[in-house]
Image (cartoon, rainbow, N blue to C red; front, side, top):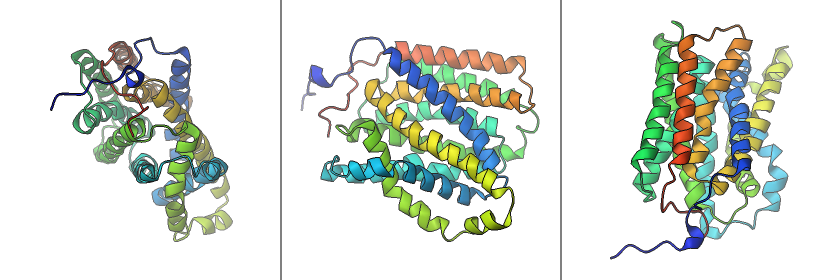
Length: 315
């Protein structure tokens, strides 16, 4: 059967990336780059599973009014994709990142998160018939190379046996890559704010039900530092999970899945800056790694992928 020609109305525009897309990209990098140190602060009192459940519960509550308003927006068959996106793009990664940071340095977790772009590319090619150009692949590999430089130029503490916990971050990035493609290709026609709130609504009750089985509420009454830790988690939930998810969905709709995922390349830079503020030292190789990562981002953005499908008419 011959390949169908994609109508011009659903192909990726040939124009350059909008300025607003770059503004959102940088904003997301700042928000999400800060999330790793917020997780670290929250773990000073709460366990990883408590933190994950609190994070999703608060994020769901923050967007609940928008979720209730947009209940009729999805088509009936889109609800299963909203649930899947909520599970693999929010709920499970929230637990994986928290658990990883019980042993893994927050900066290294931020670095490993840049693998999201690679898995977005792979999953898009395997399951959504996206074409892979050699130039775009080169940009991804350059970005991953910069990530490797940052990893291997870390301190001895970051290179200890605790690096095994980085595998949990890798698993989370695989899930992120899947969720990103689902948002782009299966949830067309839903506004970013509505999509984010509904995806959280599908998993928020699960997180809250689990939270009620933990001693998290008891800690708020017995441990003096618990409310401060809860404050860090609340900031994490509202900005990194709720607001960040809304703008991330908007970025996907404005550009394409790969450009949106390159925000994860910029997160390590923000994480390292937070490290400096916390007394850590940035070495020359760290700056080299940052430069390589930025080069990869720019190359990926320039390598327009011909024939990549947009969201309109795909559902």
